[in-house]
Length: 437
Image 1 (tube, rainbow, N blue to C red):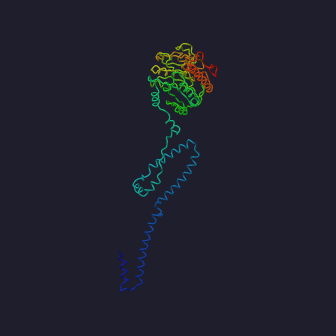
Image 2: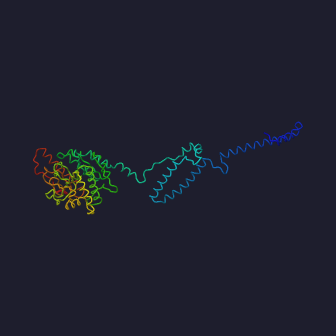
Image 3: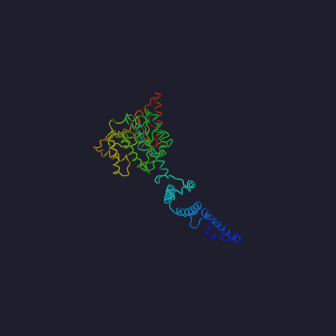
């Protein structure tokens, strides 16, 4: 629509049938210039939005991303220098916090804040999917990978109960022994111990009721390779893998922990016959145990009376019948440790038996005759009566193994004579050895 002033101008210029043609051309040029100026202004405005914008408008998305990356790169360089100045524990904490921040940022992306969120999602769409950082699930800060593996491999209380159920005899009795890496190594005590059952009289089925307690991970793996019933008794912060010399290193704690495990077996309702792994089995002990006893222990030296507190106890062979009295005895035994600091469980057992077991406990204690349940300290010479042989009174794994191998060879020779119908009377152990005499 032509404004009124422009109309008057045209009429005045066009009056008289086309007079003043130069003026008409000037008016037309003016109108065309105005139209072109308007078009150029609209085009400039559009380009400013898409390319650079006016001074007050935000930069395009790709520029914002590049600027953000530059800032993050600079901040990361500074942070990296700061992290290098921290100690290892502080650096670990910073790393955990950074991962936690990343996860939080991931969860907060797309909110947009207020009424801008929907438009931002619509505009960014595909870019948001490509740029969203990967969510990382971090392991617990209080659990290392090694500890997680141990937690998966370490049997629980339910595992112990299940193993006892599967290994026990019909009257809920189990055989038990304990091993560590040194004692379980191929060709060491565990192999010799299991071999003795295969060469004994009526002992071939006894390992079906044997629960092997492993005191470290390598012993546990070795047990699994040779036996069906293995329990890893893991103690945090303790290393029972190496040779545990008498009264040295972790020996005391290992023996007391083993004692507590025995108590737990009783509390679960199972009787047990515990045997050290450096004991060879030639005949079943069960028919040879004192009748009616609730706690029966082997002896280094036997004085002739199984009820005498003057016997020299050795916990390497220990039978305990499950009962409230037996559990009470173990509680008394454990509690008495505080009265004899720095002493092993065998010493404390000897002390409380000599003091007299409180009548309120009601547990009868008996000792085994070394003529039947012998050892390197004291043993019988009649192989027709012997049930077990213990490598006691002997220091060093090599010395124990040397003499035990000779003992097993002597037993095999004795059995061969008997099987051949030869006179085996007077046939006995080769003595002296490194420890046996």
